[in-house]
Image (cartoon, rainbow, N blue to C red; front, top):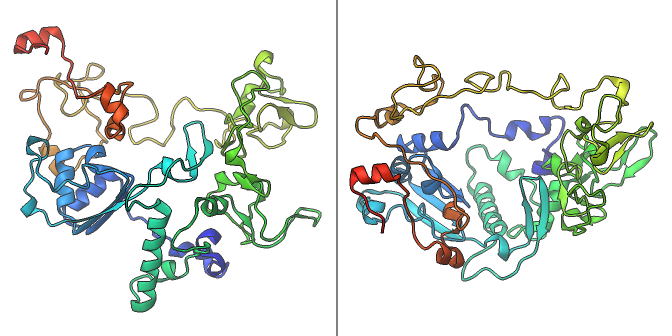
Length: 427
């Protein structure tokens, strides 16, 4: 809240929490497409996203986008969504004259044309540097959003509007408000002290204005700010930790704690306390992550654990109230805690081999119009599946020349028996 609204966020106004929009329902992409189709969404901003290629029903997605009054596409490439209103025969058989949507294309830079960080599935935040300038009129995403926000704020200041407080009170203290730099945004994500932070003995551990070094220093009294607590530690007073490039593996376990920075706290393996037995000794001494040395948890990784001694009866899975891992999901899944198999509604086999009385998921969310458009086995008796290939990463790489050279066209594979039945021959 302090990162969002700065001095305007106070204890008296609940740190600005009431300025945050409150959702009254789920607004995932399926709901978005449904509401567009019903004419209940006027505008849509698409940033680094290609809904026509990503939404589950291309035909419905096209109809949905056609009901918008405007759509803003922020992307370095020309996407199907940006040109959804163009007729391309059977590939996109639409009538441009019937489409009311005004499309604004704002060309952006790609990651190789700007400084910034990339987070991977291992939770590493790796800093990268621009290798080239963006071509033509393309701008960095930060510059596009900075200009949109400052112009929107000017309009609120001049003309007013509904719910102005979240916009007018927004903290936007960048050197150039129209062009926030990646370094500024990264430092803001990490967070800083808004006044001196003291420990239990009253000693100052972080001075006002300094970067925080750990999420453990965050306070709920308005004395610190960070817009993403798990990133706290990525840009400290010692500098940009995401730019670390020490690839040494001192323990021989394929773990490189000096390379980049892993959220949270540069911890490389979550729940790593589970690698040691209840007494604090590694289950596998040859591949030890952590051990209790009599005073604290030590080892190759940052402990995903407080300094509780092994005999304190604190389980390793600290985010679960019972302290242990789970083999099933308790109350988190609508269709129950255990793994289950349901057939798709369009399944050509017409039954469920595991339980014929319940073929498809009874709790699946399906809109009425979608249900009436579902296919049936008597019309569509065959199943087609898609899969990824080494040469391409779905629609992301189709604009890359080298990928197009090694995989120049689409293809369909079909079993020999079905091909013979249908009279289909290989080219």
